[in-house]
Length: 199
Ligand code: VGL
Ligand code: ZN
Image 1 (cartoon, protein in one colour):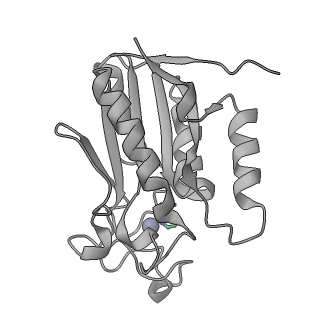
Image 2 (cartoon, rainbow, N blue to C red; image 1 turned 90 degrees about the horizontal axis):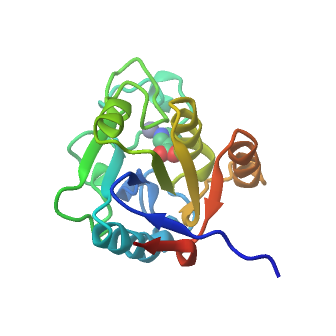
Image 3 (spheres, rainbow, N blue to C red; image 1 turned 135 degrees about the vertical axis):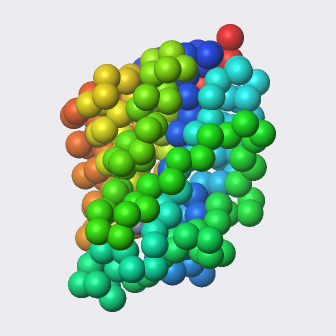
């Protein structure tokens, strides 16, 4: 039996929760199948990170009504996560703690931004705080989670993809598996809740 790596989280660790919004959950405008199933697990991660005094960031897709990614503008997706609508709100069951830092992305009409780092100050916020390792989970594995993981690696962070706290869209069968493979090849590690410990 292979011993699982243990991750001990502290003040130099951050949890990045990607786009756990109503529109990406069942009954939303762009639902990830079973997207809401990760929420109870994410809440357990949140508890551990709060206990460890680690930081918690939540990204949100936060589009203007005329966003370039929408089919209405020749893009790929149905309109989703439009600023200040119910679909753009975080899922009500997600227990975001006091002091969570919210990062809005995809806010310019003419620019797509899958990654939480794209067009935001996320990288400098993390670096100014002395964050070395980011633990990333959320929606969707094959789009925004993948893009955020790859950018975090480029920015020089240690990156741990949270396998049990992420779900993919799988527009094409196997997209999520391929996304995970690419994240690992580029240098991310993967973990589940039982591997996370507080000091
Ligand atoms: C996302 C498609 C379009 C995501 C955002 O959060 O993964 N996917 N916009
Ligand atoms: Zn979007």
